[in-house]
Length: 68
Image (cartoon, rainbow, N blue to C red; front, side):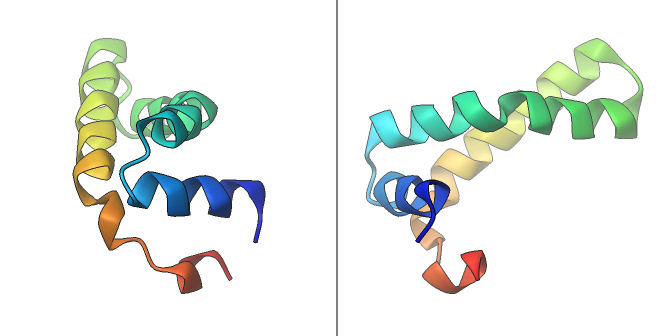
């Protein structure tokens, strides 16, 4: 399992530190996708934040097979 896979598994178990590490690694990527879609910085920040909240609320639904 990759390092990200290990973090996902821990975050899925509600390990806040693991979730924070994942977000720190991927927050710019999430923002960039939103910005390419929306073309507006403020809207992209809002959508990125909403996305991170949704990830946090649903990360327990993560399945190992997604990574392979």
